Structures are given as C-alpha cells and as structure tokens.
Length: 112
Image (cartoon, rainbow, N blue to C red):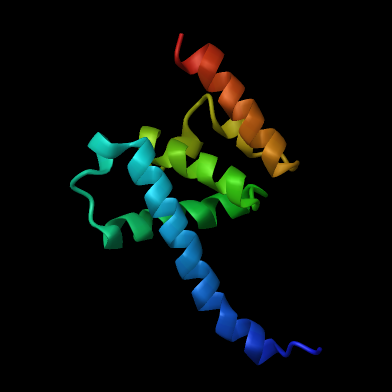
C-alpha cells in the first residue's frame, strides 16, 4: 500500500485534534483548580504554543510533551526562560533526557 502526501496531510488535522484532546484531559485532571475557568479554546492555544516551543528544544515524544506542558501550566508559558530551566533545555540533546533532568531539578532545586 502506498500512502501519498495528500493522504498524510488529511490525517494530520485528525491526529492533531486527538493529541489536543488527550492533552486537555490530562492537564485538566492534573491541574483542576488552576484550569477550572480556562476554556478549551484557550487551553488548545496554550497546548499548541507549548508544543511548538518544546519541539524547538528537541522534545518530540508525546510523554515528554505532556511533561513540558505541565511545566507551562505550573510555571507559565515562559518557564523555559527561567534560570533553572533554560540551561537544561537549550543544549542539543535527547528530549526525554532533558525532561528527566528538569523533573529531577524541580524535585531537588525548585521545590526545596
């Protein structure tokens, strides 16, 4: 079976909408009080912007994107510019490793 570029493009919006729905559900369950008054449309804008930022740092796997979006919701859309975040995100490298390092950093540095 040959899948043509036009067919792939047709699946793209469906895949993106599914991703957005999964992220909305996850973020709302993780941050119910913070996102209680946020419309789905606004949250989709946050998800899309955060996902684009994350991809710029080489973070592309859905699990890692979900973690990145958790930081966006918890610390704000520019959390990646904070003194404790950018040194981990900026250098080239594996996205999962970067998110693991951020998770470790927030456990021992930010939250202490």
